[in-house]
Image 1: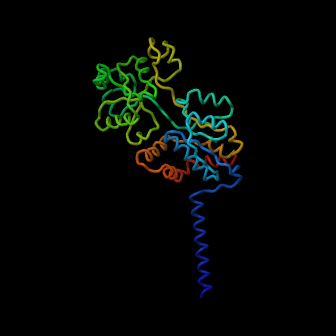
Image 2 (image 1 turned 180 degrees about the horizontal axis):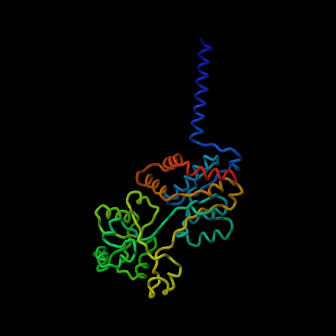
Image 3 (image 1 turned 30 degrees about the horizontal axis):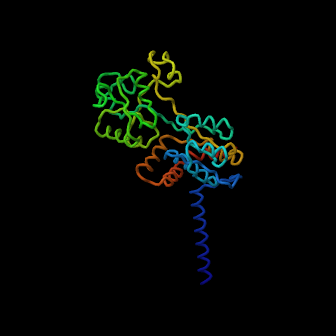
Length: 332
């Protein structure tokens, strides 16, 4: 009887272990081969904004599932370039060329930091408006709709009369709207918002009360998950726009164009590929979809959910997106 009970216990234990192994294999896939090529941690830079944290931690989660050890290191946006050149950081995965100035070209010129490809994040920056503005300024998104007296009058405030108001970025973010207004000869004034929070509050209030508003804004931002925001189609940016009056819509002014298209790239320490070749190939393939990032930003920034939980859930539900990047990285 005792032997029979022990036998049943062993059978049950083996079945439990088999089930646990199956569950683990389903949750955390394992990959054959020489990965990881080095047991040293891949150190990924975390910068100052939540979208970058999402981009980085999604990549880190997948690298971990591939078998790599990953560490996250909080780093300043520009100072991280020095750490990357020295190999103290391995990669930074969301570099906006529109706001890093000459720091990136200078770092790239040393050969110690390299570009590993576009992130694929479809960013945009410019004058934005809630959907109901199409009734107030017929003809939107064409910028020429702003020339109408109806549109100007609707957007005028006590501060800007008789002109209309364009709500601009906070003062320390750089003032683009005044240049565009002057360049295109628009009957508006640029009024800076006090903060990002103030900018968001005005957009939300405009939707709620159906009040007129055009504001400098950008995507990706979690607000796009909460309300529909469209962009004014300004004349496409060209470098000549800034210093050649004969270029563009207004032959008497410079600045008669919108903002440049934002390029977002991934960069790495120059020794990364030699040390972790499959991981390097994965990061080269890796992209971040703007809608996915916005949804995760909303979950973290608005709903207050933990970043690591949101990232882990996304990775678990989206194997069809990232498994091809992993397979391609491991097959080369």
